[in-house]
Figure 1 (tube, rainbow, N blue to C red):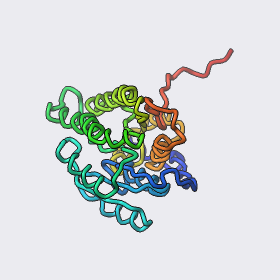
Figure 2 (cartoon, helix red, strand yellow; figure 1 turned 135 degrees about the vertical axis):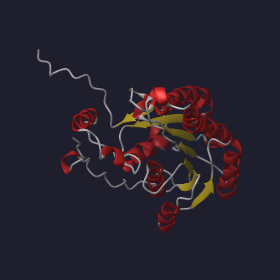
Figure 3 (tube, helix red, strand yellow; figure 1 turned 180 degrees about the vertical axis):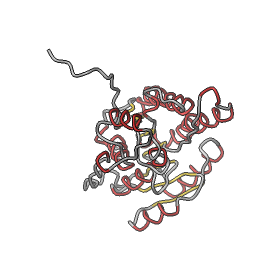
Length: 274
């Protein structure tokens, strides 16, 4: 038996972005942006708030770039494999040549490899770690000198799988847990330079990667998902709103934390009465 997401279980549509320009005159670098994913929603939100954008990905997000330029956003794209240091260096050079400075780095790019732990191939393990953890390390190391000059911000996109065991996602969860640790440690090291490092850890988000999986969830599993997502399944815009806040000057006193989004740990006790 399967249970598809119904209108009753759907999340409410996100509110329209507030009419603020918190990123006017600032430059944001976003990795792994696509038109319907989390990276694309972050790009649109920062663009709505005045940011110029440098998008880095392995393939050209043509539809996203068209949308952004249609809104008069100053945006450039460059091919970049974040697991390759030379590729990162080339992309950074293009960004600096275009904008001259960098204020925000959003480490959003990531890959997923699912399957039972005992069946995982070492090549899959290494690739997931290279992109989801070492890629963030390389991007941050390369851009850090420029962020230090602007007292900038690094926002790492982690996952709720780093906070609780998720069957079939051992490598992905391990990489994201490592990313949370990197966020904490790097924040301490760069605080004297007034650079902030923060993260978000979204639970289930309605993206093209996730929706096909939700279509075939067993009824009892869907019930458990609903209980651990009491506010409903999220949207890319929900994540983008949190990223925009953490990257803005309104969060100037926040660093070294990864904010869980949409997920709550629940121990299934019945309601207690005194």
